[in-house]
Length: 357
Ligand code: PLP
Image (cartoon, rainbow, N blue to C red; front, side, top):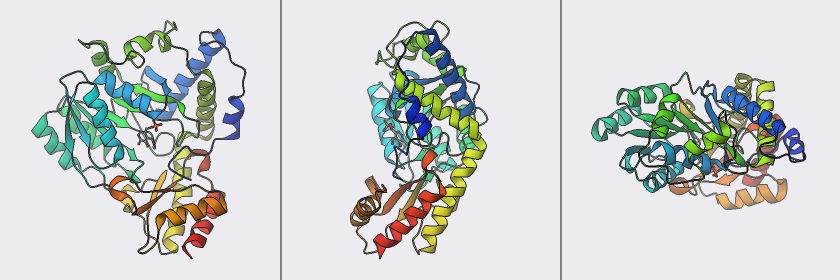
């Protein structure tokens, strides 16, 4: 119940022991189609350009920024958590100029601040984190943010690493141009093949770049050869991770995406009610509580490290401490994918109560 990787479903573990076939084998090509369709279902998108990027969430993140950002572009990134900082580093490496929209760690972006930042800087691209794993904050008002960006002709890149498959996310309806994610959070899959989707508007920009992407490996105009119609060799796909991802996504489809969002909210809601009944306080107000990552304030005078160690050693249960501006202030308790089950909440609440005694 940490910030990820989350517990992997036994069916996904079993899929990983499937014998390998070649990355151009007809059976694998069929499986690639399945994965792309299932990813579209999970992202709630019709985007043709929907693929698993070889590598962890940061690879999908770098594929997003490294292709959409051209040298000289101005890119607006948030300062309200750890991953906005990573966006800034990637943008700089892609030759972009970073400008920031501020909000304190532990709070979402205010659309008015985003509007101001657009009026001041006229950015070409706007990146935001839908579910900030470092603070347990869900960014509300996504359609409002994408409207602001599009009225300034900017593209929107959403970090959905801790939301995809666990928290309501509607890429097409919310008009998000690019979204990337990871496999090891609410999809409960080992890290290694990471979801990415781009709409035609974003892909048009990628395919008409004057300067080629600085990364050969993550260049989407080259990856198109493998994941597009041609199915020609680019690099050897991580076959086992793609098997795993397909099985994890099948589980999402079998459950139904909306029911899965509802389960996360229900189970994490029980966790939240339990910690509050113990006299603990959630860090985020209800309007932007993130069910997949629950930030609980460390009570006055309690050593967070000692609680985390106790819970791990005595109960074999992982929770995490805060990061950056929230270091020492919060516990981060994941409730993701196969981990989002009632029995885990019961175990967690008992363990936490014991550790705080
Ligand atoms: N973005 C967010 C919100 C994350 O939580 C993470 C990982 O925890 C990443 C990006 C990077 O993903 P990875 O660690 O899989 O490279």
